[in-house]
Image 1 (spheres, rainbow, N blue to C red):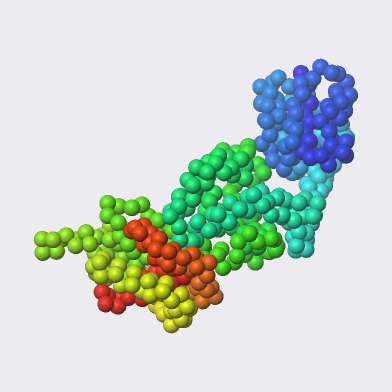
Image 2 (cartoon, rainbow, N blue to C red; image 1 turned 135 degrees about the horizontal axis):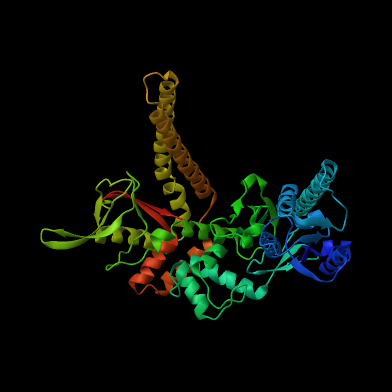
Length: 498
C-alpha cells in the first residue's frame, strides 16, 4: 500500500503552494494512483516529531502496512535535518521506498549529500524566520507598541495600533479589586474573600468563567500593567509549542528571563502607582495577616515580630497561677523551626491597648503619620538582619576556602566528603546572599514609598463616622495603616506604618 504524508503549519506556507490540498494532489500524481492512504498533519509545526499523522504513518510502516511513502518535500517530514534523516532512515530500513515530489534523492553518497544539504538549508531557513520574527517583535516593543494580545483583564487589544486600550467595564472591576483589598471595609477579607465576592456578584472573568479563583485575583493585584507598566519579552516560552504532544512530566515550563531583557511599554493606568505599591506590601504579608482563624481571635494576629530573633509572635492561651491568660509569644516548638525564639511574651491585653491607642492618636491627627514615618520608620530590624546575614556569608565563604585548601592536599583525606561539604557550604552561602538581596530591595522600596493617602483617608472616614463597632472593624482598621509591630520586650515596641 502507498502512503502519502502532507503537513501544513501556517497560512503563509499555504500561500506558497504548501496547502494540504495541493500537496495531496501533487503526491497522488507522483504516486500515479489515487489508491493511497493519506496521513495529514494540519496546523502542526515541522520543528517537532510528535504529530498524530506522522505517528500513525510510522506505526503503519513498522507494522508492514505501508510499502511506499510519497511526500512533497523533505521539510514536510521535519524542519530539522536530524529528525528528517532519522525518519527517512527508519522507513528505508523497513524496506519502504521514500519518494519526494520536489526531487529525487538516490540512495548513493551523492544523493544523501544532496538530501542533507536540502535539510540543512530548510533548518537554516526556519531559524532565520524565527530570528526575524523575534527581532521584529522586539523592535516594535522598544518602539512602544504591544506586539500581541495578552488578554489582560481590564484591557482590549488594538491590533492595528499595537496598543492596549482600557475596557471601561472591566476596569471598574479592577478598581473595585484594588479598593476592597487596600482600603478599610467590612465587605471582604483577604484575596480569597475577594474571589468569593466577585463570584457571588456574577461578574465574569476575562474568558467568561463564572467562578473567580483566588489565584486569578492575586495575579491581578500583582500585575504592574494596572499602574501603567507592561513588560514584554519577560517570559521565555522556547520549546513550549510541543507541550500538547508531551506527557505532564516531559512538558517544558515557561521561564522568566533576566530582568535586564524585559522591555517596558507604557500603557494607560487603571490604578495609581501609590495604591498598587501599597497592595504589594499587603500581599507580601497576606499569609500572616489572613491565616486561618483559630479557636480564639487575637487583635494583632499576623502583625507582630520579635525585634531580637525575627520570629513572628502568635497568640497563646497560657495558664498562669491556675488562671488562663492570653499572651503573644515568639516561641516555636514545632519540628523544623529555624529558631525556637527568644522567649518574649507579652500579655495580649497590654499590647493590644498600646497599639490601639497609638492608632487612635494617629487617626485623630493624620498629619502625624508623616512625622511618625520619618522618625520611627527607619528599617532598624531589616538593617540588623542584613548585618547578621553579611556575617553568615563571610563565615560560609571562609569555611569554604578552608575546605578547598584541605581538598587540595588530597593525601589521606576523604575527598568525597570534603567535596560534599564544599557544595553544601556554597549552597548555604547562596541562600544567605539571596536573603540579603531580598532584604536590601525591601529596604529600598520601603524608603521610596510613602503611605497610601487614599487608604488613610478611608480609614479616617471609618473612624470619624464611628464605624468601628466590632472586633473585626477594629482589626481591619489597624491592618490598614499598621505594617508591623516590632516587639523587643513588654515595655519596648516599635509600630511600623505603611
